Length: 280
Length: 300
Image (cartoon, rainbow over all chains, first blue to last red; front, side, top):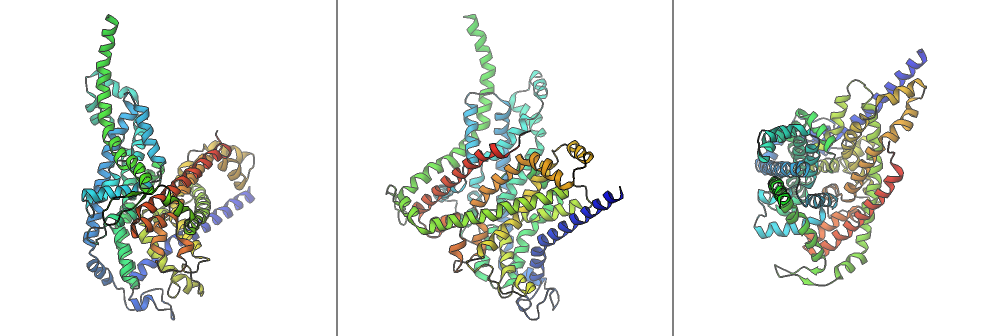
């Protein structure tokens, strides 16, 4: 019994050691990013002696400089608008289609749903050139509409919500039907509120995907005034790549909002990703 | 006659439901047709055309773009780069995540803090992540060479640059895989482990005889999504590798090459042919994986 106890303890210690080492590896890039952002460029590129911490005080003004010279207000605004409308469009269209596919009977349903499944299997790169040409023709280059365009509907979200609606008990809706509620009312006031968790999953997934996307904003927003955080960083790197503290300050500014949202809504994030299991 | 009338009555309710159904799926289906299905056809058409200059129309050139794409050494090189990247990102990303997930479901103290940390890279834009790693990898001033007193050209030595990029990929994806593994692990009934405990099976034996087979559907799902994700990698390479980097040829992925041709050089026809090659390749890989699933996945 005592030997078993000792063995368990040893296993526990070993697990902690692995976890702590991994946590360290995961955190080092973040810590180094913040430390570099607070140094002067001289300190950042000093090799001998090599400084871990800023020597001449913490240069918070780096953030102010970056904020002003790269116009972060506009980058935040563009990114926020894109995320807002993408989440709105995705949730709205997916919840409607998901309800219809999950609970209504109509001819051609299986065929139409197979279109949804097929879309999920096609690599999205194949859509990009024609999507760009369409946005160009519509005159939406460099606009929020253009940024939202490819995410206006979502096959993945439709699939996710369909599964959500299918999982709801049948009698609820039947009772409402007996009471004379039409389908639209039943959907709005009874069924939709019950799929809240699927909707949150889809919302988080859509927001994260939009936030992380680099290629699309790079293609349609070539002007730094119209682009998003991710694509904006790419432009900054091209322009000021050797001013390391500035680069790191910009990177911090770009990720901080999402990190804060994540830390607050951790549970929803983790559950959202785990249940949706979508491809990011 | 009467029978027909009753049927018609049912039809009214059915018709109502049908109309609601069509109205509800219409935005999504129309959207999918405009945003996805038409583009597939359009890309195929573009791949058979030479892109006209300055708004001039496309001219049909048949399979010329495909000939050019398939005979270019660059295409095969970047395809190989992509496969090499996947061969590191997927196995390491999955294995490390699995170990962490198993540890984090062992009821240790502080698991939620660890989970938060491991998942953190998932909420960061890859563009920012790549910038930070580029700085860590910097040959002269970077943290890695300074800490280890080495002078390794992490991202400009053609022999190792692809590994350096893949390490960033692994680092970024561990948390995502881990979260999926944790939810898979939580579905395995605890009785299996209790029975094994009574039989005196060690933790490692329990892992291989209970966890691995029962988790295999989750594992397969993760591997499949990650393989496709890895084969379409773009952001990391694009952000870390400057166009002047000598190692670029040995690192650039097929999507990177596609971006360069279609959007940097504006040769949409060639880019479309490239993306078709990628799609065919991914379809092939998916097919192989689905065949493998039947053999490898344990269905209880």
